[in-house]
Length: 194
Length: 151
Image 1 (cartoon, one colour):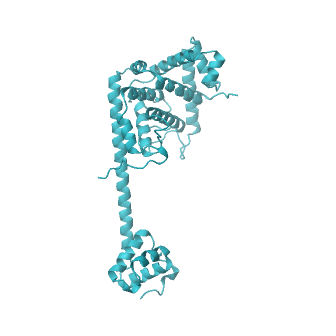
Image 2 (cartoon, one colour; image 1 turned 30 degrees about the horizontal axis):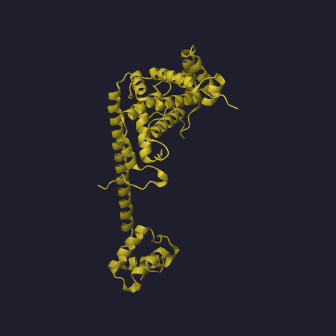
Image 3 (cartoon, chains in turn orange, red; image 1 turned 60 degrees about the vertical axis):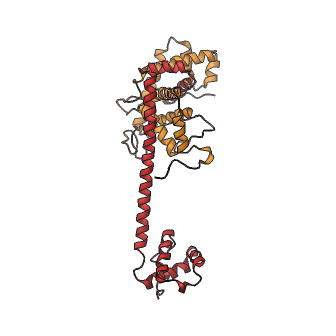
């Protein structure tokens, strides 16, 4: 059978052979980064919506990259960051559409026929997100810097704005962000699968 | 001036910030993060590697399936076009003559090979019609010019 991985990549977009090479070249630290990022973006099943795992996200990110639906330009961004961005975008899409992961044509419990989220699904998403943010604010109420980060995000500020308003150094910001990361990871289901 | 974010937007911005933390983490911190998930780093390496390999195989399987479907569709379309050619020699010759007159593509293709239409054998006519059918260069059956053209 002919090799179907070769092809000319227009505009610096990686072809299947380059993507396969990049996968083979991933080191342990890259694999761990992908798993941890996926866990941060995973979501458990809830009473109103399907969830997804770190593995669901990574598989979808790889398939979309191979199929060209999510283009990777090696000269602009490294492979791990590309996959992480792809996972983030997929999680956001699934959340907004109320769409569970799975094979193409999976049953969509929360979307209208044109794949827009139904008002009910949208309200549920807002409710879930509000509960998660409130939970974090409560958990970090005694952590001044982490609280400033959460407030700043709520107020629409970027990182520089948050640091300026709170009088935080970059070191303080990074340390508080690390504590938030650990807390978020602890709140997720264990492992990468269901 | 910043705008207050919805809860959903807040969650997405926070996730982005936390992922930046993961991308910037050194090896030791990453291992701690993995253990926060109740897993051993070496086991995660194997699991993620297997997932990536399985995803690659899945992509190639999907691609082979798509190529197979395309091939089958093309073959069916071609067979259908060939089947729809007239059954008698005279009708086929008339159809070719009409195609040459109406289609610049057909005329150009045939002029290169045959200077005189009358030189064409019946076999040549059938072969040329098949090729034009593949190019989609045959006139439609309901062409108003279709009548009175047969030899």
